[in-house]
Every structure is written in structure tokens, then in C-alpha cells.
Image (cartoon, rainbow, N blue to C red; front, top):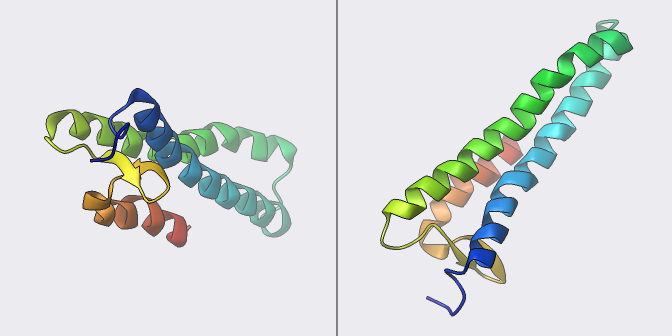
Length: 110
């Protein structure tokens, strides 16, 4: 394991990457949904405003849940999930399959 890979800064960077980058994709989906609802379903500003709480819960809730589960599982393993990943800290090379399943997969699907 590389020096500094288990530091709090490394884990913080990995957590923020795992949490915020997929959230960005989900917000793009929410904006596209708003456009669809406005043009094809006749939603107005008030109708869209009522959906904001659902968007926030979904767009931040799903990625946050995955990031927190990684932290919890990370505490129970001998080798941490969060660690060096090429040029920054993220999901370590040993757990690359988790990147595909819980980061790239949902982002590509969205």
C-alpha cells in the first residue's frame, strides 16, 4: 500500500468522489425529466417544484448510501476499500469491480 493511502485526506477524497460524481449524473437526469414533463406532460413551475424533494432525495440519497456503505464495510476489512486508484484516492485497485458495479454502471445507465 502506498504512503498516505490510509490517511483521512485520502479517505475523504475517495468518499467525495464516490458520493458527488454520480450525484451529478442523477441531477442531469432530473433536469432532463423536467424538460420532458414540461413539454410533453404540461407541468408548470409549481408542479416541478413539488418534485424537488424527490429529486434531492434520489440524486443525493443513492450515491450517499453507497459511499457510506463503503465506509462501514471499509472499517471491517483488513484491506480498505477506499485507497489509491491510479492518480488519486478512490475505490482501490483490489475492489475495481465495485467501481464498475456501483459507480460506472449506474452513471452509464442514467
